[in-house]
Image (cartoon, rainbow, N blue to C red):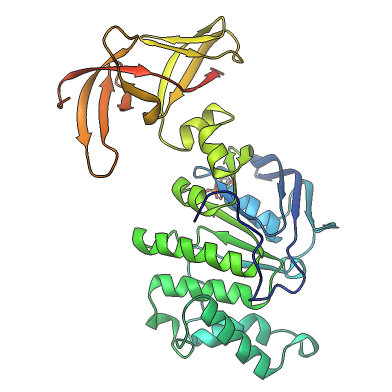
Length: 355
Ligand code: ATP
């Protein structure tokens, strides 16, 4: 699946009202004085799959819960379409959830789990039994669990249970689908395949989806756009390639993708560290840090400005070989034979003034 631009898909699995945009404005939320969200603003496009990415404690879950109506902010607004829902209940917002822990009802079959949200609707809003049964079949097909409707959750694998959770969240045709580390408890292989499934299901339903993860690979692979959170604030929002290739802050440069952090100084628009000179025309003069991706560094030619490093390890397990070396100051460089001295020319990098 490509990153970034996904064409608006047809919606055979049926979102009656069309996709909805969400606008988050100036959200502040404290827990006992601790600012979990510190002025968060975010526009989520109709039908978009947005990943909220950030380290543990950065406020991802809190933001998702504020969007869901499970938590209420002290300041700011949550707008669904053109409706202010900041203080509306979760039920009134029409959101579907999937959490990391399988919150399936163990004593109910897969089919009953999926229709639960429809079964408990008031009679006048409840679809007929036939319509509900048809919906289960449609959703089982969508999440590729056809024929498993009569099983109980304990008779399913972890990945299958999360598919059921997803089908259940979609059963009520939510306007917004919210997922909090839905694959967090699964092993790497299942996780990867479910990631693709989620993308496919998203494209089939067209429902605006917000996905919380601390796994950058997951965010970059799956999402149309990624919002990077740090300490209760959004550091950057953009397409995966923008976040990776044009980090807006030192935090994003260090958190997303692999990078070697070099300390130095900016003088007259150039970043200098031992053996490194990089253009940094927009960075104020003074102490600075450069983040250098492995591919931005090459083995130096004779006479080229370079840093000296000791080769630690060669990793040759794919089409691209990789050398890992240690800098004099113990900064690991992702760029001979182990033990050899190598010279590395830093060709490019991201430079930020030091706070
Ligand atoms: P993780 O990836 O570890 O789940 P997160 O980015 O989702 O982290 P949140 O769960 O949103 O982070 O928490 C943000 C901050 O708010 C954390 O410091 C957390 O300890 C605090 N926090 C969250 N919920 C509560 C609560 N109910 N009471 C007190 N503090 C809370």
